[in-house]
Structures are given as structure tokens and as C-alpha cells.
Length: 129
View (cartoon, rainbow, N blue to C red):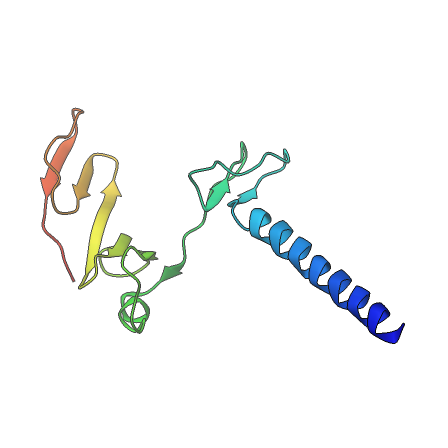
């Protein structure tokens, strides 16, 4: 009798763990959605942020703070607040300026800018720091 009840307990615990595994596994397959509508994340996104009244604020730091990041991940994005201000990403070996704008009439694009539409002046640089 004791053996039979122990056997039932083991089966129940195993079934519970199996159920929990499948629930967590299916839940973890979805990305994270941040919004006020309750919409689920787009299937192709790990993070899906939507808003009609605000944006995403990327970490802001000085050039020295950016340079002191140890082992930055390829694709890491920051906004530099001093020197040549703008968005920088880590390309796997160096920090690269994506775009810096001193004003609306003089926009400087990072490396590999080939086609730009508009009537304002354009300065193409290859700025890797």
C-alpha cells in the first residue's frame, strides 16, 4: 500500500513538472511587448515597444564612459553627450558614429552613406573611434 501511494506521488510530481515545463517553454518563446494596449509582441521581435506619446530613450553617456565599457557586445547602441554628439554603435572592433547632427541644415552621416535625398548640405565621413 505504501509503495503504491509513493508511486502515485512520483507520477503526480513528474506530471506537474512536465506540465510546468511545457507551459514555461511555450511562454518563453514570445518576445516582450511594452505598450498600453495589451497587444502581444510581434513574432519577429524580442522587444516590441509601441506608443503614440513617447519614444525609446537610449543610454546617454560621455565619450570616456562609452570607451570604458568592458567587452561591449556587437551592435551595442549609446548616445554620446560630449565631443561629436550622436548615436554610436559597437561594430565588433570599434565604436562607430551612426549619425550626428549639429543642426537641421548640416547633417553628418557615419561611414557607408551612399545615397541621400533632400536639399540640405551633406558631409560624409568615416568616423570610427
